[in-house]
Each structure stands twice: as C-alpha cells, then as structure tokens.
Length: 297
Image (cartoon, rainbow, N blue to C red; front, side, top):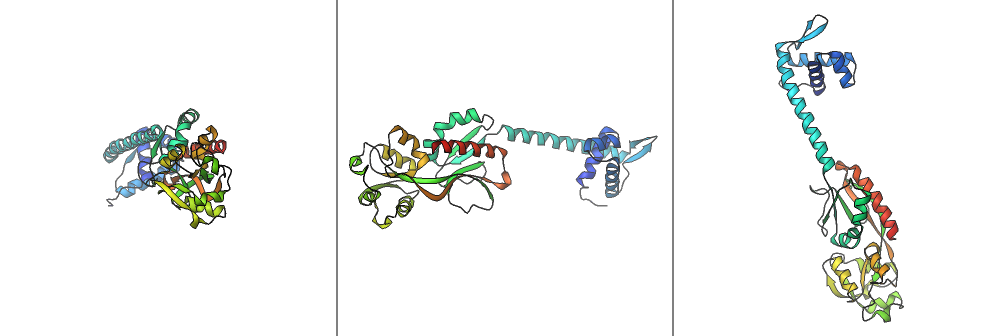
C-alpha cells in the first residue's frame, strides 16, 4: 500500500461525492461526467487498498474507512477554500507598489497623482522611490518605472511607454542666460555644465547626437541625483540636462527654458514587472501612463 497522497482529482471526486451523498451531484458540481467521478472513486480505492462506499439500495453508503476519509478531506478542502478565498481577497485589496526614481516621482508623478487616483480608483497605487536600487524581482515591489535601453530582461514583461528625449535646460535667473539663449548648441562646450553622478553619460550622449565633440565638454557642479540637479538649474546655478517629461512643467511655466530642444536617445521610459507575477492592473497603469506622457509631449 502506497504512503503517497492519492491523486488530487480522485480526492476531489471523493470529497464532493461524500459531502453531497451523490455521484451525480458531485459530477455536476465538478463539471465532469458521472462516469468520470466513478472512475476517480475507483482510482482512490485502489490507491488506498480499501473500500470507501458500499451499495445501499439504489444509492451509496460510506464504509467506516470512507467516513474517516470524508471527515479528513472535508476539513482539508474547506480549509483550502478558505485560505484561497483569503489570498484572493488580500491580493484584491493590496495596493499596487510601483518603484521609480525620486526625481521622476517628485517632478512628474506627484503632480499627476490626484488625476491617476481619480481615473484608476481600484489601483490603490503606492509609490516607492529609489535611485538605481529598485528591482521588481524582489518582494515588496509590483512593478518598476524606469528609463532604460533594450534589450529587455527575459524574465520581465515590459510595457514601452515613450522614447526618452533629453536636452539642456537653464533658468532665466542664470547669469549667462542672455548670452546663451540664442547661441548655437556648440556654445555649451565652453560652459561649466551642471551634471549628476547617477547618469554621467547624459551630457556626452547629447553632445554626440548633436554632432559635438564630447571631449570638449566642461563639467562644473555635480549632484548625486537628478532631482537636485534640476533644482539647481531652476535656482539659476547653471545649465543642466534632463529628460523632457521631468522639466515639461518648468518649461511651460517659464522657470526653465530649453533653447536647443530635446534629442531622442535609444532609451525608453518603460514599465517593468516580473512575468511570473503578471498583474492585470499593470496594463491599466501602462495605458494611463502612455496617455499622460502623450500630453506631456
């Protein structure tokens, strides 16, 4: 006699038959035929080496072994139903945790958060800020919003939202504003440029895309994160470089100007989530983000 658990389908067929005291009703509840339930009951009896039912007139009656298994299986399946229902409810009630950089959170997301909550009330979005240390593979994050270049990781479902466009920006408060605002892009080669250590390739990439010698760039004040870099630019401390969505509101309000426009890079702003944890809410969020970014552009 085997000590392994019997096949799950056989146990399900038995539990339903014993609970309903009817093979026909068990078959109806399990959405299978009468014959399929009967075969599963036979498989179970053969596996256990005992009889679970005996004929009782036109019906069936549980043997002593059947009564013991009925009590155990009923308790086990009821517990499974309860736990599965709880897990489903917990998932439905849980917030959708989205990781993104602090600069993206502060300069683009927060001003739109009220609109997102109104448009997607069931999403219950929770935002988690970080700088290069966020990974949706780790527990605690459902997805990641990030500027990155393809190819995408094989274990990620990636929603591409918009191509990244970066460009130099400066404030009318900057001492060199009048000198630079109508000058060609090459004028920046002699300018001490504000830069960020979190993305050192931004200025060289922009220079190459604008047919300038990146070796001629001069770097001035540096900042750890893009958010601080852009605050410095708004304060008139110099010329910074940034993705267009993060400075769109400042440009619109006149706090910053972008005399040389924005250049498209190979990167995309994309929503990443692990394929193993695909969440239907991510598709809704991705579509909402696409619409908002289209308006930003």
